[in-house]
Length: 216
Image (cartoon, rainbow, N blue to C red; front, side, top):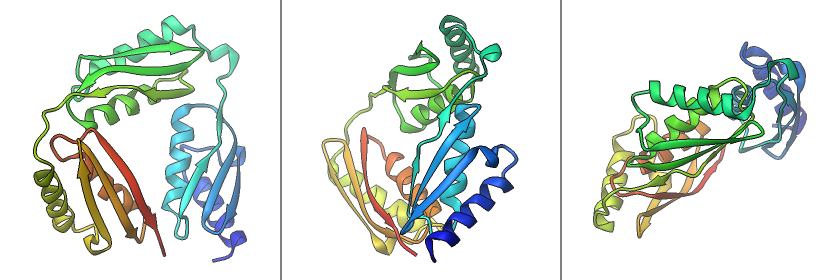
């Protein structure tokens, strides 16, 4: 697929998504690498635009350079925004009470401890959905017991094989000190995300190194 065709497909996908203002986003492509530039009205919209681009056939990576700008009359003081974020986190049963949030100029930093990566992901997702947030940094520590490295590797490989959405033959797994390294090739971003989610789901994992390439 040519760069021009890929730009057209990604642009069409952005316009297809009612949650995204496609007119505000400029798309560039270079051999499968897509860059998004422009200004959007919320952090959620920035995040959704990246997901839209990743869904397009032929996209190997997405460089999301979109800026978030909140209209001045809709902006909030940091203290008020922190209160909104903490309230949203508290109302989500998947987010542990051990997670806290700080806000500086609209940028949220999540701190504290969690036992599972899905809890970190949920906290980041919820915080990013609060209106007025322009970005989220995840500094939440994972505090989980450490099983044997061999157990982690075997459990992840079995999870890959069980997953009907994932072709496990092109992937390899290595583990050390709570870190999982996943490498190989998959045929779509959906497969990529399934593999990374499966790696994070293993007990004792505190870090995942993503060495997966998306090839078409």
